[in-house]
Structure formats: structure tokens, C-alpha cells
Image (cartoon, rainbow, N blue to C red):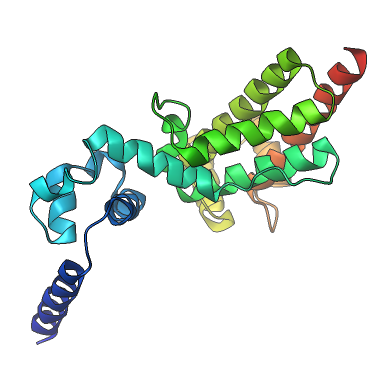
Length: 231
């Protein structure tokens, strides 16, 4: 009975979606939601059309191809990242922007390797890059040093986001399970330094790997400030 009700509800939702005019924004948002759920490898024109309740050919009135859809999805990710705020010190602005970027990529980990890969970036992507460079140059960074700073910060942001997404645990409870599994495989004194770090740091109440991000970020910002002062 429940299965029949679910089937009826699904058909009703599909009919309701069909009544909403198809647009580029609707296509991109559907692709975005699907990719968040199932990964970018799940994305295809056929599956997307099926999800929207239309024929695949209808999509081509609004997007050129799958690459165009990926361009649009990456632009949506950039639109979620907070721009550097004005009226504050550049270190504060860059710190807030970097933290926002890491949080957004934690929600959309499929995008990590795609953020700087697009040859036809969208307006949100371009606005974001321009705002970051503008913040640095307004603070007195030369064009070359601003470029170095941008490259360094993004390398750290994307690298950390990738590492965080690749961890075999997401919560402190899962971290305990992973650590216990490793400990059971080897003698207690086989890897003393690793075990000490696990017990005294990772397995402490409230540990969150994401907190490591701000420690490294502050070191980078301090280094950039030193480079700016000596330039």
C-alpha cells in the first residue's frame, strides 16, 4: 500500500514539474541537486531529462551540452562562497573568504577538482576571482604578489578540502572506530607516535578535523603579511 502511495506521489510531483517552464536555471539547479546526491559521474543528459520529466532534446534549448552544465554548476558553487568583505583588514577578509570556501566545498565535494578547470567560467566565478584580487591589490599587494597569494591560498583551500573529503571518518565517533580498527591490527607499541597523537589529540572529545584548517590558514596569512611588508 505504501509503495502504491509513493508511486502516486512521484507521478504527481513529476506532473507538477512538467508544468513549470523549462529554463537554464531550472536545468542547472536540477543537475546541481543530482550531483550533490550521487556525484558528478551520475550526470548525463538522458538522466537529467528523465529527472525533469522532459525529452533529452528539450535540454539543448537551454544548455549546449554536459560541459556547459558543469560550467554552470561550478558557477553556482562559486556563488555560494562569500566574497571578501569590505571595510576590514585584508587578512580578516581573506580569512573569512577561505573559511567560507572550505565550508562550501565540504557541502559540494564533487566540485573540488572542477573549480579552476573551466575554460568558459560564469559570472559568479569571474566576480569571485576579481573580488579576491581587488581586495589584495587595494591592500597594497603588487600584481605579482597578489597572484602569488591567490595561488597559495587556493592551493591550500582545495588541498585541504580534498583531504577532508577523502578521510575514512566524518564524525568523532567514526574516528574512534577507525582508530580502534587500526590498533587491533598491530602491536600496541608498533607505532607509538601515531598512537599518541590519536589518543591525545584526534580522539579527544569535540575533535573535528575541519578545525585544523584555520591553524594552517593563519600561518599562510602571517607569511603573506611578512612578504607584503618586505616587498
